[in-house]
Image (cartoon, rainbow, N blue to C red; front, side):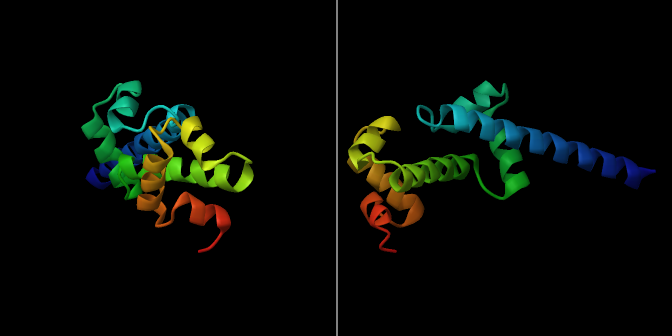
Length: 122
């Protein structure tokens, strides 16, 4: 009986974790242009940032910060590859303080500058 109960608890935790993860992704797609901190997303989900971080890390193996960074980097990549916008315009569009800051952010995550990525020299 204990194993069955433990299994049910485990399934419940997994389901809740997947709900948190899906909710985080939905919120990210809505707010990534303005908000890049864990606290904002945790607040939107009515849970502590500590709890959100713990749940997401144990469910996915990545931190909420990593998910935010990867989400934003992917968006920058899409814009570099599929839009006619300049790096300056993309930086403005994604609310970075300036193109240099966006460049540093992008390079930290991808290992490339936006210019290198745009040219496809990698």
